[in-house]
Image (tube, rainbow, N blue to C red):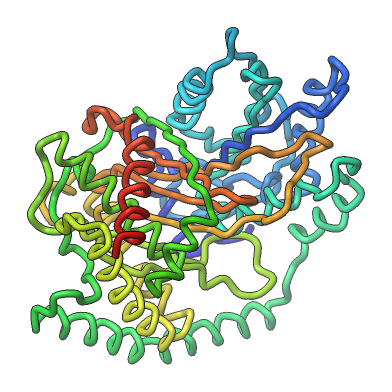
Length: 457
């Protein structure tokens, strides 16, 4: 058996029908030229064999509903019909129909008695297009690892097909066994790393706390200091997926003109959109919302599990001027990155676990409304391919990552850059967030406002 790490086990303990804890990717393709009628059916058959390429797709929980000892074991009775589903949209195949179907698929909990993944192939999208929606439990892989897996499916040539030749050597990795001496050596190294990380973690918290106590205007945010908003209540099982695209080049240009990074500009755009949404709902707090930015501390060559930390940064939803909002974000993110760079990967993960533990306890006990949220929203920006990608000769048009929402944190904003555009995907719980489907349009307007403010400075 393969025991789970603290973070991976936490994601399984949080998993429920109201809080399904999987990540997902919506991929939109154009059918290849002269594709035969059997093309999509054959693609579905290929997807059914993905467990042969990726070992994590061929393992399941030893005790699916146990809470004490969580461990993975190989699946000995794999059935592709439990994992790959094929649909057709009603004509004319609007994007809204696709997002409705994807939202329904995303809100459904994965069956814990089977390998924790699904692939949904959806045909009939307007303009000769189709979509793939892939769900994987967060305990199996984090966002960076999931993107690496998805990337392995693609080629940069329209003439190449999916390659299953590498399946066997990858499948053997799961069955490797380590000796008792190797396990004890790894354990002792882990204890030593934790011991060395304690002073670093203490120093990190001291620096953050000192800035807060001195009431510095643009200080790195502390956990559990964000205001309570429509996004920070208990959630039910309903989910709403929202997507939109922004041009990569012009957004990068805003960063160059202001001395900020692409990530800084995107945070400012999100801050403007969230501010306008909350204003429309007459629910904008006087205090700024706090974003949690996942940071991968994954070691070289690692592909499975979760190796994450967080940087906390205000969205500055209390700032009306878009350019001032961006400049304040630039100032804070520089401080936050400098703090994280000073500590080890172990200390960074400990910081993430320190935020995760109270969240777990509050969610499991139903007490998330009793304290301020650790953060108001998750924001992730992941670099993607600058080249045109193909899946079995079908050109990829967009890739949109959907993530987890839970009690106290009912919205997640993720961006992937692909070719010359930025693919935004928002995961939300619409029950407590009326009109949230308009957030894509508000993101576009926030971008235009920031662009105008930058040109006019």
